[in-house]
Image 1 (cartoon, helix red, strand yellow):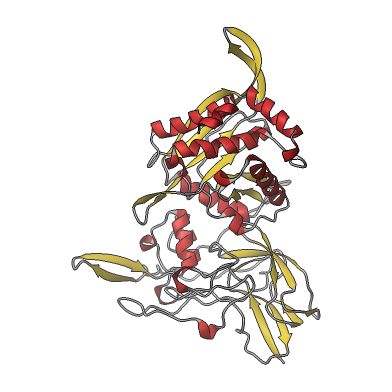
Image 2 (cartoon, rainbow, N blue to C red; image 1 turned 30 degrees about the vertical axis):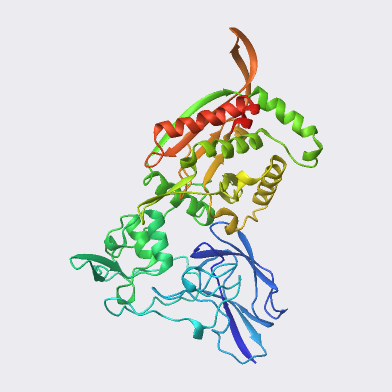
Length: 467
């Protein structure tokens, strides 16, 4: 008999923490291999985790509603095998170590691929030698601690400013030095998302390792000293919402995008009466039986067609390699408002789908998003996004580009309005399109051409035959 601990795994896309939403088991329950034991909420989706071993639940180590870092033990199971608590448990990789893989397939760099809830034994983890010297010890994993009492007396010693993060200088070409700071991959990803240079962050971790808290303190420009926060008394009726999960990641992504990519937004007002007529015809077509057809379907198709003429609209700016990468497939993101916050799942290779296939994919995307079951893989790899603000009765806006992409289209409300046709004022279905694009790689001509092409297809869907 032995006790096995199951640590919170990275369920994909480099996530660093998750909230325990609900336990599916209790102490004393018997679990089989791959039984679902817990539902977690990551920054991107709700995920059910299977247990990687069989036995009897000995202890639930994290209460519901608590957010913990990847690698934190969350449940103990008494098993028949007398193994150490580390067996079959994924752990956070050290800097420059081969980290456990993500869902499905082999991870980049020859890493070992594992499924959700599984991880290679610790004996499999290998460490490549550091360049330029040995690093400090890895940041330890902290066990969850009980909640602090309501009132405490704080004793604060004289503040001591921590030393800057140690750096390793590597010579490139014999005369140029490159600075290398000590930080784990999740911390590096957080800094990259926030646009922070780790060389400017003050390290407080063991051996000069930069921690997540160091990055967050740097972001908020906190002074390098110890301080006790005064208690905040809420006015009667105030509601406080924790900044976590989807809301937290969305906020970080929008700040990073807004202050990294120079946004330009253009608008065009379009007579979409022909599109509205087409939508009504498609609703009666047997190819669309049991499918929900809406004007968004035609907009989505128009985007994939217009991208053929202006492929730069479906590109990304690769700062690290100083390259513009034009994507071969249009992974079409649809911004979806859910009870958990705004998410952007995408339809892979949307340009290759027929109109009925695209309609089915849109229907599935919306249904899954409403249930809060959109998985991280379905939100990764997007190349262009549509945000349908028209469903809220909004005419237009200046949308912020989804990080990793170069353009986003806002589709406004479709309304009957007076319109001039052959010098006569007649009622027509009118909408406004707003395109925001990254001016580093998309100039005014390219952005305008793409927007005009989308508008032309919506004004006369038959023009799609020309693309």
